[in-house]
Image (cartoon, rainbow, N blue to C red; front, side, top):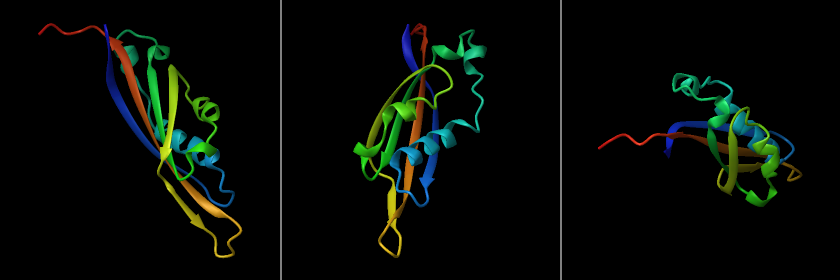
Length: 117
């Protein structure tokens, strides 16, 4: 058996006024997941919790993202979160706050038998 990449889901999330990187990251992952219904596990005779999900988040300040809060968004399977520099931050005119944009990628893998060559 080998882990095979089956799905790539992409999303974007923002925190308009609070510059909360975790809030933007959570919203980005929800954006990636919530408009999809993965029936591939059932089609293959697997349980939805058999999925392994690699979550990648891009924000300007990666160290300000609570990875556990992002991971809690996953409805099925097991996951891991990696946060890298990316996204966008736009300061307000007063210089007292900013809007943060986060990008998310959810890579879904399943353990499938090797096909004969």
